[in-house]
Length: 229
Image 1 (tube, rainbow, N blue to C red):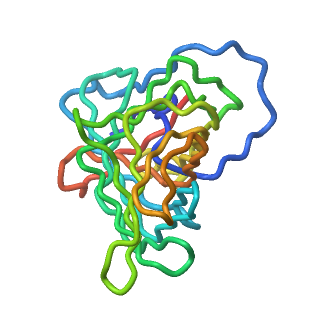
Image 2: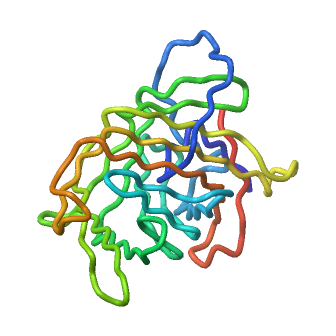
């Protein structure tokens, strides 16, 4: 089973590097399933080296991040990504940090994605949207000796800066192909409670890398190779 991912948006998260820009007008680059696109396709994104990092008044880093997504049909123009695991997180370089998504997700659209090369696509800040349920935000809470130090919260918004890339990778066989996603989101708004976290700002950044794999079943045991372009 093989299908092409023509710019499977950003996932939450990675440090980006741009290759030589191919002179090509930006246009919608949809996710396309070659073999009929029947039923659902399930994705998992595992951390690809380094750490996922959130920076504002403090630096929060997580050593283990797993992201999930589901699509249906032969072609889609957006993907909604949910954090399934966030662990090994620290703040201020020493404190344990707890991150609660509270139902929030990242929705990636590909309307302004730009092709960089035969195997790489870049995504722009306007393609990425943090979406939270009404009244909910992503809460980041450092703790020391088991007690909360402060909390920073990030609500629904579209970043004002940054970009992402998606690059073909993985095994050479069609069923083994995966996609490496790299992300930097800048200009994120946040609010804080407690002195160490500050009160508010518009300067937060989120960076990270993820290897995305696709499966034909919800148990993630039967892999589908993915490529784009």
